[in-house]
Image 1 (cartoon, rainbow, N blue to C red):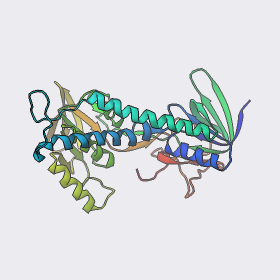
Image 2: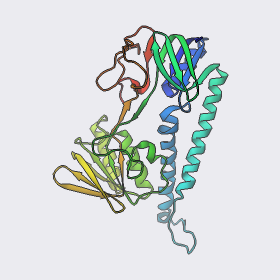
Image 3: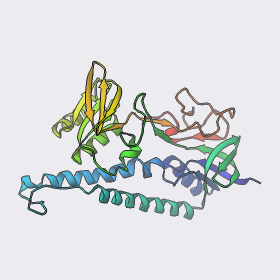
Length: 319
């Protein structure tokens, strides 16, 4: 027998949990289906850990330049040199994430949002099937909100292996810092990682295929960021296309069009994110998906199936 709710939300990221909280505040009964931990990419593998590590990098850069102000930061023999303990930094990052996650989970429970652990699929109009390792549950809702989020995009020839070629997920959980890294993609995510790694002492090459970095921003803004990056030692190359890479020794050699190469220890692929729509069971449901995998919606986020909405990275909005 299926459980009945006013609203069933698939996905516990910012789009999903915000929808669940708003629905609960309107005195509606709400089920929230999440296969991992509530909070989504933003809390666990995106915005929050990235901003925490950016703060760490900013502190490190400030301390490393303290000698110019006559402030000694040396240890041991008195050498005026700052050091970074990445393990401690990552531990602090995880403490911040865990604290916010526990707070969010408590808030959802206080607001009487029913949490279901598992993978949710749309099994018919107003019907959601939740599959976990040892159970299958059926839910029914007057409204269903799809909020399954997104995954990092990849490019041909740069498959993510978690060791040499990294996505944003792996960068935010690194065990050590490379001496050099290439960041492929000069959008917001790529620039964020280029800044982070450079401040932590990594020699960074930023590769962007378009004529300028931050293609969604005004040219004046992009120019300011580029000048700042150059001043900080980041090698910014625009209008270049990567064709592949050849691992060897302690790193890899990236091939660019025009027979140019770049040798680095790590590669960070930051070319945007793709919608995670293929596991929602949308085939033959009436919910239309475009050629890129985004769920089609109108101006109020309604899909092409009555009673079903889609929000967040699942729809084609600016990232």
